[in-house]
Amino acid sequence: MTRSLRRDLCAAGAAALLVTAAALVGRHIQDTRHTLFVRWPPLFATWDPHVGPGTPAALAVAAATVVYGPALAARLSWRAVLAAAWATALAWILSLALIDGWRRGIAGRLTTTNEYLRVIGRFHDIPATLRDFTHHIVSGSPAPWPAHIAGHPPAATLTFVLLDRIGLRGGGWAGMWCIVVGATGCMAVLIAVRALAGETLARRAAPFLVLAPAAVWQGASADGYFAAVAAWSVALLAVALTRRSLVAAAASGLLFGLTCYLSYGLTLFALIGAAAVVLGRGGLRERPSLLLCLLAGLAVFPVVFTLAGFDWWQAYHLLVTRYYQGVGGTRPYGYWVWANLACAAVITGPATAAGLGRTTAALVLRRDRVPAGPDAARMRLAVLVSAALVALLVADLSGMSKAETERIWLPFALWLLPACALLPRPRAWLAGQAVLALLVNHLLFTGW
Image (cartoon, rainbow, N blue to C red):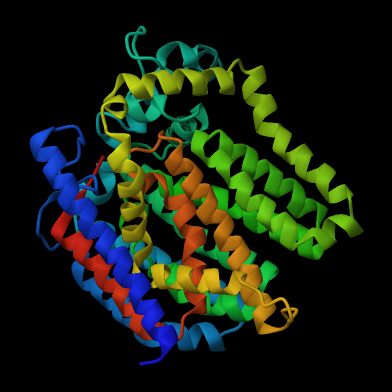
């Protein structure tokens, strides 16, 4: 066994120990103090061994991706890689969701008490509802919003309101919207990695972005949709910087503005965007008008929502109050500040833990050698992945993400997965990723 392989296995083992410790300590805290408000710590899930109609398809997708994924990603044309990645990711997410059945796995997810479809009737007059939105965030206010609606800016709920308005009503359409759009997130990350770190690493990352354990939650919540929108904002920024495209810059700004009105916490994507700017800064030097287009696009959604009467900053401060009125004020920070990282280890899998170890090595440069060729590409990828890791850690330290981070941190998880491109023996690591996802989805029922 080589030294580098031992380091990879040690990193994966450390992640496994972290998850084990979070489970054992969390079980003790929940049994004795009842302050975690999760039944299967650190995950928001219940023990429920089962199989379902999606089981055969999930096994087939996993086996095919492990056996053929790396070779196809290396051999197909780039456009075919993107199309195959999206199609396979869609099949993987959908088959995992259908392990729980159509109603429990997809159609019923967004219709539960705290979910978005419960309040569609209150948006019959959208402008009036936006003006009045902040008056219903804090518990104790007249007709307070359910938890997820209060916990997000109104663009999240408006997505499902607009789907309803065009005739795509009910939990089935809403669930499929999140799955189909969410599956495009892997394409966005691949495009960004190719633009900023080279096509070779993007191709190596493709099977890992497809077969991520995060897919268990991408098919079960609106956060998969949020993750895709945020990912495309960075991908378009990378394209704008490397191809000097004003249209891509404006579109990137537009989507980042939308991202901020889908989830307050995703403003931290500015850190990943900043890394993209650093890596592609030559584009800004050669064409400064890219920045103007980016800012122009970025202003659209804030201006529209502000003119409609929604105050983002006021709403965020009211959300903080609401958060501490509920279980967020009871859940112990001292446990979740590290148990959240165990949740992240589950959704990104053992391969990502090993890849992050190699990311650290790629960032450590010898003073007597300027990185070039593959070394430079690995360093650039490491910068992008590290920015996502920093954003995740800031979210963790904020205390506004105690529990349920296996769902909330999906947008950041997508940008940690490319670290797997640095690993040798991709099939073995892909198999580990697939086994973890299959075990979680067959042994637990994940829900909110």
